[in-house]
Image 1: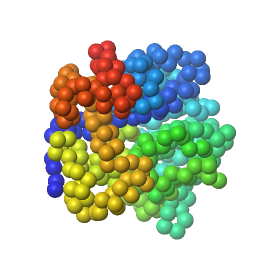
Image 2: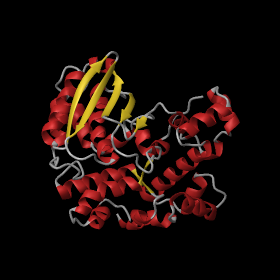
Image 3: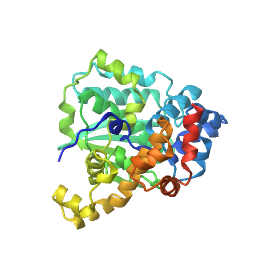
Image 4: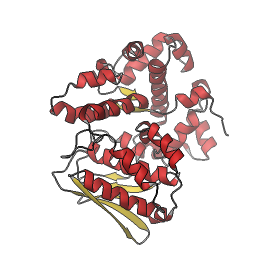
Length: 345
């Protein structure tokens, strides 16, 4: 069955970002003595949200945080490299590589540019049999996962934009320790992320390298206008079962969500297969439904003036008090903590 998104559903279907990534993004600024509370306020992120490890923020709020940190530090790489990635670097890089003929040539230019701009990483591209590899050499001590993920996001987003398609990543291997929760990274990149390995590399199908570049000056202006927001949402991993189910669920009102046995019939799978595959992705069907309701509630609270009664109805709760209890269980804070952001803007 196919559904059509209305504007409201489309607006509230982009997911959210873990507060842990906000802490990570601010870490270098904090270590340099910069007033991170002021940065959070300018990004419209209430300080109360930083007190719970379960809170999440909207994609647009995180994108604004990235901009505010970059402006304050004159560094588009969150101050995580020995050499700052000055403001305008990514704009210059994207404008330069769109003139390449193929993705292979563009990717070589991307890596060359980043090798010049950043001091702590040195990356190369090579092909072996049917796979291409981006190999990242650490020139300084091994960094946190957040650093590698941000670095790869800058590269991978350009690869996808230049080719006008999702470049599917087969696997990522990194020397760093695993973060406490890597679900956001798996959603962004791929399911197969391995830690504490001997080398850092990203593997993907070598056939992508032959794709002709499909962007021009007009599309570049649109891309840059929406960066970094589009780096966070446009090129997510679409292959996981949880992504497939999420895509199905956001097309309908929560009151019409299928039970697991009905979903199994819809997807032509057994209930056991769905449960097993979701478990392998660190997810369950109930958690997936809760996450969508939570993310939608966060969007409503921060981007609209809907009352708690309206939000409760929209998410198919019996009454606002039931919604309030569920939301606090999901995020560790009350809905009012997010509504404060809306009032403060």
